[in-house]
Image (tube, rainbow, N blue to C red):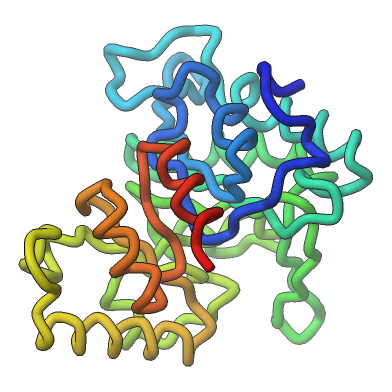
Length: 257
């Protein structure tokens, strides 16, 4: 159940906000759900064969597993809501950042996800080698230490990959790389002061348009976490506002005309 707040049926799902480092909030997952977020991020470290959620390995705690903080409560909620995280709502995204080399951590992540197949969107290879998407309530996207090589030979794929701006030229399918994410400060100089320069706006508009033509969503991290900046992202079609301010971003989106 949610902590104190609105019942799930009264919450409007917000599909253009992303809870960055969601596990650092007082109630991981639940604070984001209460605001209507449809995308949350969990960093995981492989410790003694378990995926523990924390930003740094030294901050991991045995009880804070990917299962206990995210997969178990999501399963309970999906069952209660008849097959979705929000009643009748959109697909929910769990962005998992692998902090260890994928060769070490991904096999464990895959084994864990196999146990939650009833709620996870999967991609199953058919006789001709193509993949058939089986949509379910939650889509897992892997970021951090990841590689397309880690998915080689899988007959059932449980994850998609978080891409970078270079993937706009690489030609991977949008089912494999549904997002492109980048550090805002690597791509743009503007930090929210004054007017967004016209040349940078043109670059942003071009990047977003190219991603949308390929069926991908766009997310920037490391960006100013304030309403003025969010509005520029929103108005220029950036798909996901990456934020640590759940309440503020929720109010911002709900207050838009």
